[in-house]
Image 1: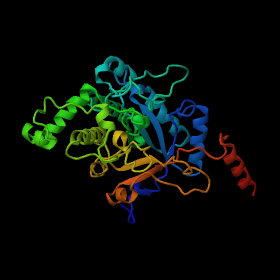
Image 2: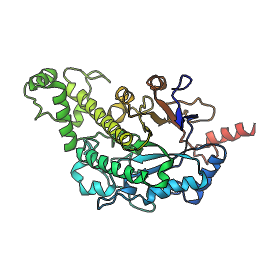
Image 3: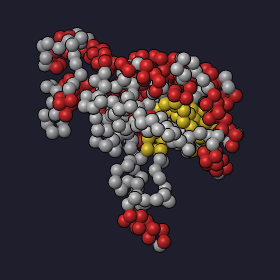
Image 4: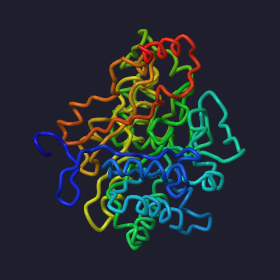
Length: 382
């Protein structure tokens, strides 16, 4: 805290927390290529020295199990070549590599209402291009994923800190789920997760909460249910609520608790990987994540929102939360007020920093809405 607000300190000096971040989209993601290099230098020249780049396990975790740092080293070196005094942050996607998902299909998400779709393979690929559909992705309840990815993250950090470029690393933004924003796979229009890893997690979660089968039976008003027989709610049970948008906390308790457990799963992953970063870097390091979206979650807060905010904010392993502004109609038009998606005062009161991500196109790009384009051109002319 500095002057009453959360602040980034670098080498004991407070810095205004404005980052320039490269995209993960082909053509703009690699620091050594022409356009990203030009943009990095342009922002560095006007004084922006907090730089973020993207990396994923796909870039460093090889099918033979080894950790290869060539791409990571080159990504950091590309920043330092044009901005030698930059403080570099890595947005690191902790989803397992695509080869791992094919090797362990039993660890993948199972949708209640759709079949998983393989990634479209053509041209130059963006790793997260198909995230918003019903992709073949590892279940967030997979203990194998958390164990193996946690170990590989430790190995990666050990190798990175031994490189000269590692001296420039100031922070890691842990990314996972849809677009790295910790939404559950398929949440936009579908219902996750019926996989065996989620079934196992849910039963253990119930056991931790109720301790005895009898207590579970009383809570669920079901004399037959036990920790070993409790099942995930069906699609119909999820879609039907007895009181409009509200569920009956007695007769529909099993559905409510499934969603609560699913949100715990997501928070588990965030805290697991942020803690891994904190504990495996040789000096203080800033950790953050996309989380805390309270507004503009497309009406799908239960299936894929961020409802464990309090738990995440209470963690000593989280320094900042981040998220883009709302996308709803009018929110991005010229002259409209900016709308953040989080409870920013709550974030600040917990001593955490909130970083808004400006990921919207500028008004200089071609517009599909001709009426809006005409009104924009008119306003510019005036």
